[in-house]
Length: 357
Picture 1 (cartoon, rainbow, N blue to C red):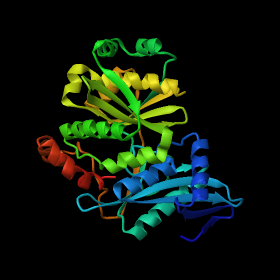
Picture 2: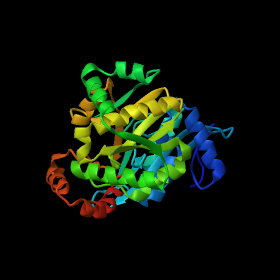
Picture 3: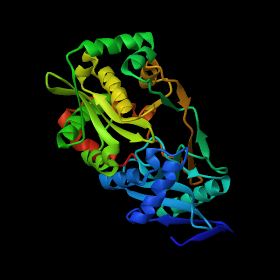
Picture 4: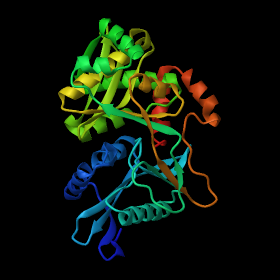
């Protein structure tokens, strides 16, 4: 894409993340911005592109002196089942426009929409970030985000958890469960086996195993896996990201046995301790749909839900893409998926999920 003059001191262009210099410039900008998230980082875009076979695009707005004034990471998602969309950012709960002023926000929004049209994507989705004005649909009532500070010690953390959930964590600590933390092939296999079973039980297709490997590769030591075992068998596991003092437990779950063992409670408490030891000060419990069990579970841990703002723009006359599994039209498919043998779900799931974005 050639540079488009937008104002005397602002220009927009698309960059190639394979260029080390460009990638480092964007990463530096994201890490220095108050609203930056791991989903704005080039590492995320590259991992998604490699792990799911989708195409990433990154737009930047630059000042006249060459400094970056804004970034918009995008994933071009194409699926026979769910259609086409340009998403910021793909396979993430966050992303969107990261910018310093309204002019950069407007420029990146217009540039993203122009790119969507050139690519034949009828929908552009912004998952958080600065929102533009104009022909956009905004949603601030569907999802909640859950973030709170970490306590200064395990004892203080336990005391900070509301009474009912604290009792569950105490019981989990009394159970004969072991905790391991790592990022090697064995950790990845254990995590994928647990996570795949967990999402099958929820009626959701599992992501390709390659996505998890690529995220670990791209993020390096800023990502790892916490696994809980009972009698040597992995029963709960979570892959987390570490960014600017915050831990993001992103892909986690438990087997059918995990509930009785309270393995998930043990896992998250262990992750809090591990993150604190790594120097983290905040725990981002991710997003949950309003009124759902996962949202209630996070509130039980002492997290207050904060509405997340998402924006969509669609071609006139076309509906925005809807991939929410809670949509009633998916109810029958979700129920059917829960009944699939795990081996079948793991075979079919990656082919479907990589088109969700």
